Image: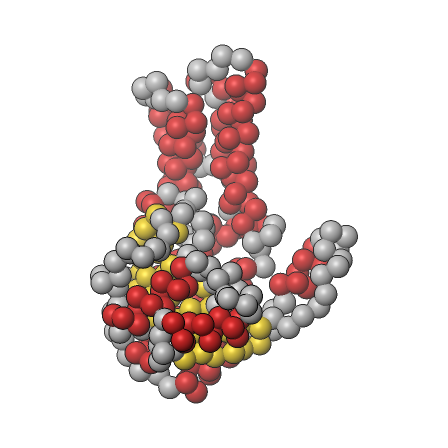
Length: 290
């Protein structure tokens, strides 16, 4: 932790104004991230054990009534960094490449479609919206919608406008020119339907969560029949296998996971102004980025 950051946090503890302990930890954590995270690379590679060490070192600054209360507060602080560290080095680690490939495809689609400085909304970007941060490196106006673990101000430093929440039937997309999502689960139906009605370009990597028959192909048929009759889709096989990651990292626990082809299906609208062949080329090119 930077010395400057530590001094700011200590100043906050001196002027805590009788905050509830957990609320105080939240405020400290947000300020800590604002001062420690200066770029997307810090989101991926910076570890945050110093924050928990700071809480432990300043135990006396909190109003603690008993040993159990302190234990719970310490666990609460540890959970703040655990969520970020889990995203980086545990079950979410293999998604980094997927996020990078998706972001590259989105930025290239916008460029090839000659959409200029269009405003973009990524839906279901995850509690750490890594793909949105990457998209924002290639675009000027990027918003991201999900339930975030990172503070809004931190995302703003990455040029991402945060919208905390989930897309639903009343969500207004009129302020956005392009809607995208990487396996955004329940939001897929809304993205396709709302974008089609508004004649906005959309680009979505499917997942089976809402498929009527639990298959990607079945979901394409469902969306085309009920949400957007003009829907187009690309089926692509990537060179990265998530099942292979789990077998290698957790060989005992996941040894039953059989090798499989990492098949992705992307649905998109003709409003991109890009031919099916061009979309195919963009996806293929970016699916093999190392």
